[in-house]
Structure formats: C-alpha cells, structure tokens
Length: 387
Image 1 (cartoon, rainbow, N blue to C red):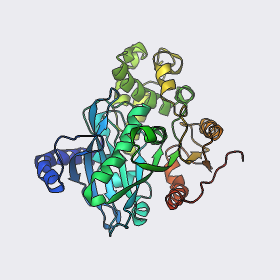
Image 2: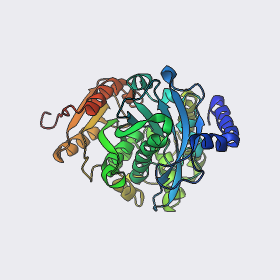
Image 3: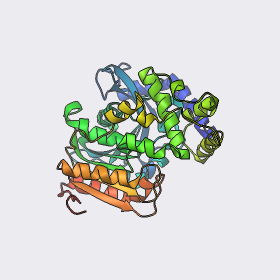
C-alpha cells in the first residue's frame, strides 16, 4: 500500500525512461556500466534540492552477493554555488527500513528530500548528499534485507556514483550516516571500505539506533507489533534469498496478514496505519511456528549479518534513544563497548525519551557537528574507558 502521490511519481519516473537516453547522453554516460559506481542512468528530481541546489535520481552499478553486476538506485543532492578547490565532501545517507519490495525505494517518493533530516543544513555546509535505496528497492532485483555485504557495497558504490556525476565536483572524502537499517548499512560500509573501495577516503561512520546484534534484536521484538512487521519483512526477503520457504515458519492462518505486512512500504503515516491494521489481524493468533532467532537457517543468517566481527577503521558516532522499543538501548550500548574493545574511537549520544522513529531526527545536530569535525581533521572524541 502506498500513497497516491507516491504512485503518481512512480508513473512520472516511468515516463521519464522515454527521455532517459537523451539525459544520459547530455551527461556523457554509457547505457551499460563498466565497473561498480558507474552511472547507468540519471533523472532530475522534481523541485531540485533544498537551497536551490540540484537533485537527481540515479541508477548506478554495484556488486551482488555472488559477485555479479547489479543496478541500484539512489537520490543525490548537490549544493548550490561553486565547489571548493579540493572538491565537495560527501555524506552518504543510509535510510531506515522502508520495505523489502521494489516499490518501497525512498528515491521514488514525492518528497525524498524530506527523508533525510537536516538535509538543507548539510547542503548549506557544502556537502554532496547521496542516499542509496539499497539493491532491490527501486529495481527489480531481490532486496537482501539486513544483509551486510549487500548494504555496505551499495553505500560505498553510491559514493563512487556521486563522484562520477560531473555536476557534483565531489572529492573522495566522505562520512557514512544512517538510521536503523541504515545504521546497519553504514557499519558494514565501514568494515568493507578498505577492501572494497580503497580509492575512497572514509573519515567516519555515524549511526542512529543501528541494527547490530540481529539475534538479540529479533528475539527482543518478537512479540511487539513493530517486531512482527520487521520479522515479516525479513522472512519475506530471506526466504527468497536462501530458498527456504517462509511457510516453514508462518502459521497457515497468518499467511494473509504476513504477506500484507511483508509487502507494505513504510513511507507515510497511512502506511504505518496499514501495518497496524495488518498486525491486528494477528490478534489472538500465533504468527510464527517458532522463534526465527532460535531456528536455522534464520539464526545463522542473523549471526553472519551482525556487524562487529571486523574492526571499524575510522571513528564511530552512535546515537540511541532511551525510549526505543525496537532497537533496545542495552543492545546498542553493548555494541559500543565491543567497538571500544577493538580500539575504535566511539562517541555515544544518549537521547532521553526518544523513540526509534525519531532517533535520527533527534541526533542529527550532534551527528552533523561530529561529521564537520571529521572533515576538518580534528581529533575524534571517545567515550571508551569513560563509561
């Protein structure tokens, strides 16, 4: 279920495909990309960017889970005015869960700019901002939900694509910033950066209420409304990824609400209300035959896709709301302690009374100040050893 404006915009983008070849020719792109980060296609976003800058929806190349070339979409915002001599620095934004099917790509929304808190301030400070949709959102491939390699590569290749857009005049220096699923994505981008994209200069990773220990996260959330929604999306994606049918986990009389929740986009209040209605259909019913956090192959998949096995090579900013019932504060604090034990400089910001939904909104001011300092080369603050 998506709102009418979203459907209308998707139709508009479909129409733009007819002129996409001309646009690509004007920007000098090939229709077949040669390497990860190459731009396959580009469309202007309606209204441009905040503050009078330019805004585009792009299709760029990335790498699939089997090493195959895939296409991923993203939105990119370029500030107005001349670029500095060394080029513009980049903030790679990674969005929270929006869904697991093609129609749920944030770059297809009428107000994609509104999906990034304080975007106008980022552009006013001269940053190029690029936000990947992740594989399978906005493109027909499978979306590997919470699969670290997939998300991390998509984030890194979005930075490469931002640099490939001539209008951006972007440098190779960037910070990765994400919320929830996006926090999971940027943490993996940090772990993969040196091996996957050594030409890029990652200066820091910032994550608000990130998904970290997936086994603990799904186990803690299994009985909540939000937990059922996220579990439905995860099983829908993972069953297609592994070939293990979701029916092995979902009770037969819960199949209809399960499929409705799994294929709904989280793009608006109306979408949230639809998810709540679907969850109410499960009242008095047993949604799952077993807890996937304790059942293979799902448990193993969660363990393999929990960040932290590889050391972060850059400073990390973590923000966590105390009223978050989706990503529990204790889980994020445990992850921060793990980073500290690996020698990572960690800044931890506690957000009193903040729920999961607003973790990025309530922390973006602190995060942006922290990002500014990383670009300036200031020493990274750290709470390690101090709590």
